[in-house]
Image (cartoon, rainbow, N blue to C red; front, side, top):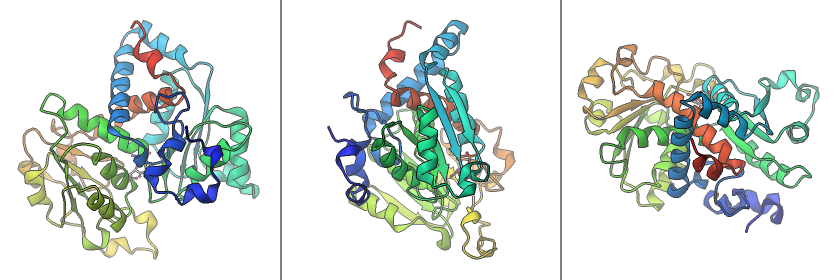
Length: 358
Ligand code: ASP
Ligand code: CP
């Protein structure tokens, strides 16, 4: 079995993402992730198992006895939430997921309040957290930081799992998990997710959720992906390369209304202007045709859905919020369940929960 201790950082960091997967798995043969770093480490089997576990956890949690059982499952574990970039949902849903499973948590939400402010390196900070906790859930503006930290920790005396809760413009794998969970649930009694058309709209260039979800969708059969954006914010080449390599149907366009007519799911995203290289650069782009309003809602199929990783600005009009096809609030709550499933699996508790008597 491949281990992160068997490979140098230089060799590991230059592998294709898919080839890194075996190094990130638990060593118990379950194939579940130990470290969760990017979407490429999930295949359909793991995705479906995680979704089943999330469903199981939400069912068990409905009764008081079940909720108390869950609270005991990982009561011997502690998790550190290390978020050096703003977050509402990802922070809180991981926190709530830990609470559901009885995990005690600690947090740093601003590097200026940790000793990084005094010049401590990320490596030393992470080593410090690993002295007190059994898992690190981290969000960072730095691309690839979670990956480096996972390698460092695996090669330390106290290896513990790292969950990437968003890294730079690059990846947001746990968001993609909750997006897939939402898609699977939305279509489970309507013929399933295979063969569907998913439209991505907005800032596809800098939106990390798009890159992670676009990849996970390739694990399903015959899903068509349509990318609708102003040309300055169109989906980057690395995403397209993967789709071509995997022979996935895709289109690139700029007509949200036409795309909405044939969409099973429309995945809206906000303009990620925090990444502007010069101030006000995004504001100069005409984004007026990349908003979902009453006109687009009227064109959407009866069984189709609207998604958004959130937070939103004005790219989905609030007039859509009460429509049964608006899935973004449920999507957000699904995040808590699927993250609980992921955390439990990373600690090796998938079967314990699946097979419990509740
Ligand atoms: N919350 C998501 C992220 O952190 C999407 C966004 O911020 O627009 O990537
Ligand atoms: N979707 C998401 O990651 O939201 P936050 O940035 O609020 O965590």
